[in-house]
Length: 224
Image 1 (cartoon, rainbow, N blue to C red):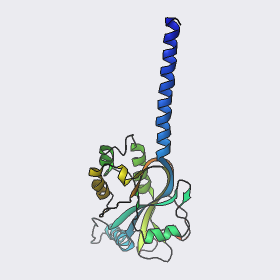
Image 2 (image 1 turned 180 degrees about the vertical axis):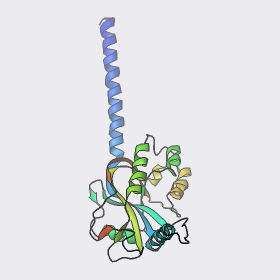
Image 3 (image 1 turned 135 degrees about the vertical axis):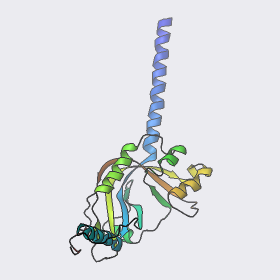
Image 4 (image 1 turned 30 degrees about the horizontal axis):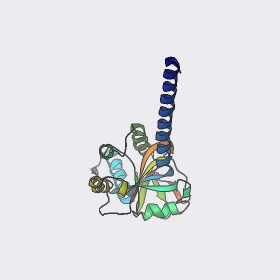
């Protein structure tokens, strides 16, 4: 075998090796990412929201008014489908909104408050600034929704479809586990916790259609 042929074969072998490595990396990414669909919800006290709009009316009328500084609220993700498994549908969504309880499946929405930690512990290794902007912007466009027959809560909601990175807690370095639970506002040790980190959004909308849920129009039921 002459030198020229030998060099060509080496290049071919190197190319095949690189392709195999790339395929393995790609396959690993696909294996660890899971299709996910669901609702990102922020729930408020209806009384507090109504009060804030009443104060705006007083301000417009030149009357003495109070400016609310903060609202009681809670934000969480309600999965509808994870992989091929239907998790929640129909009226179950309403039940989850009214009686949300954290279980061993923890769905993490990357945002400005937790992204640095997620990068530090190598959970998020790619640029997902687009996803962070999508979620924050979509929530700002969401109207207030109310559940028919319930006069206690209002909520903003964004429905999205995308991918989540699945990691059981034991796959995360032990020294970071408590930090991660803390940034997810979980105040207890969860040995069987499974994390789903939202890393890709394909479709989203802040306008939802769910039975027994309707848009709440702030000035319709408030006196002028």
